[in-house]
Amino acid sequence: MGQFVKASPGSDDLTMAFYYAASSDPWYTISATTPSGVATVNFHAPNAAKFPDGIECLITVWDQFTGYVVGIYSGSSCPGRALPMVPSGCATGNGTMGSPCSIPSYCTSPPPGLGCMSGAANLFTAQDYAYMGGSGVLSQSSGQFAPAAAMVREQELCGWNGTTCTGTGTISHALLLTTVCVQAIGSGYVFPGIALSLGTCGSPNYGGNNSGRPNADQLFFCDYTPTQISGFSISAWQKTILTAFCTYGGYIDITQTTNSAPAGIVLQSDEEMESSEAWKYANPGADCTLNVDCYNDPFYLWVKGQGGLGGSSGAGCADHGSSTSTWRCIGAFLTNIPPTVTTGSMSVDSLGNACGSGTGCLPSGHIHVADQCIPKRYANVAGQS
Image (cartoon, rainbow, N blue to C red):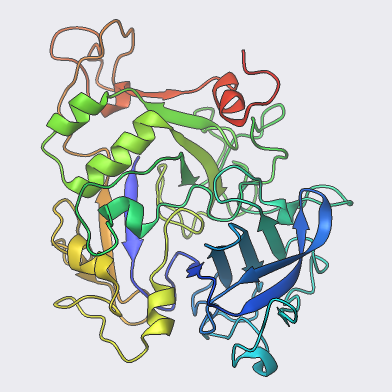
């Protein structure tokens, strides 16, 4: 449990293309599913924005001027090809506030405006309404969070101060976590889930039935204190992720088929990790090798020097081969943590060590499942007590 993967651009990047838009960027318009139903959403986006040449074909744009976050999904129409976000007629960036460039629906199923494009008024608290509509809730491989609501962004992880990575990162929100399958017992999901839409254990292409598997959208967390975490002899990236996991928790929100998913609960996939694809398309002539940064993305100048990360070579952020990601940083945010005491805890770890006395217990005893009232209190909805 706890594998972490940060991938650089390639044909299978594991993550969507994520863009930060400024007021000087062109205006675009989409017909998106929003809290009030299918509606027109106008937003800024960089002119060079493209769908990634990975397998997911997802774009997320966070407009820094309007605050809107939009998600555009192109289905299976672009794997292996980096396609422009808009048709050639708008590729020159001629969209204005009064005449925004229209982005058509690239999906044929589900219908346009339902499952292909979503709009959220802010990054952190709205749901991903692309999966909701008049015909009910659609099946999907991830839950109903707003686009990128719980994504670990490079700026958060490295402690970006506007000029450089400081190494003192802060993630001020919950994480999203991937597993191979979820329970299909009873309702099979908990708040904030609104449907049993993830891959269920025992169904085709997913793991076998297992009573120990979590429910969809279940909130896990750890009980280490900030003081304890700061004293651990672990790398900066690991401290940042561990602090977020112990402060806000992580939702079981994505499932992958058994031929592509690890056995445990991990942080590695779409909506979980910011991609470098946007840097690749903005700086196509730049290099991306192990001895330099990656397409002028300052994050890689920092992360390649971090400990606790390995790849195919087992050292640092390793070359993963041109057929997938250019290179990957692979670690585990629950590794190298010593036995630690949680005062008053009745838990034990997987080896039977008591967490509340003696030398304490290993991470398996410090991880818990939150009651539904906790995320309901986060969301300020009924049932929070």
